[in-house]
Length: 303
Image 1 (tube, rainbow, N blue to C red):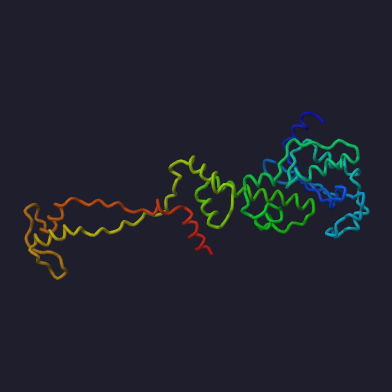
Image 2: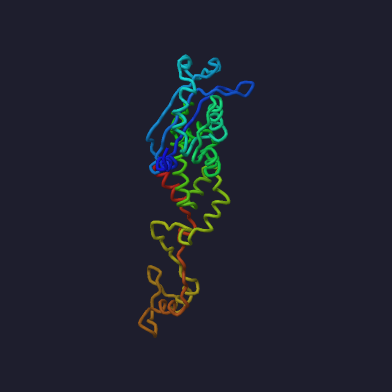
């Protein structure tokens, strides 16, 4: 394989999954199925796929969850498909759920059984480890079936090719959630916390994000101008106006009488003008109402 071909492979991702028998008392596993999809890393779209049943050395070990158990009698052995599996995996980035602890060892064991060197990855993306570190347990446990149910993707079929495709979709959904959280960490964190979500980012990471967030992002301004509350006249002003006007009022209760010496205004207005002005600061909802409150009300409207 030339250098350009090697370079191309290193930039490609292969999501794969294996199905096996239960381990024997001696700890022996038999591969029953291999499925893989080749994914473009720039677009995260499937560009190729491969799947095959594999006839185990002991066909009686095939699980009854396979509805086509009889198909294994005529399925190829691992040695028959080893070249194809090697070509798919070798030199590419391997991706899958819990592959570091389960799938990768089973692949290496299978190649060792036929006396061949196993394929080697350019890198490994274990979605179980990635999600445990970044997504947390907001969906419950981190089993593929649980994550798929959480995102409404469907029910896990426990078939290699289907599970590889589901793995990619789960990662896309998780990545979208994390992208939104990193864009509006304060708002999304509060919303997630109110819904009972448990996430790695809800404590130290959220605090760190807040510490590095610009001051302008600390609170999101409301999309309207708060109404200023009417401020009642101070009692001293009313008393002074009543005294200056001699206590006379019209039918509406307004003071009437002489004009002031300074400006032909009623005495009550002159007395009020003479007092120091009371500056009232309008109370805005911006500082007291975080963005998650708007989101909550918006959801209530859309229901």
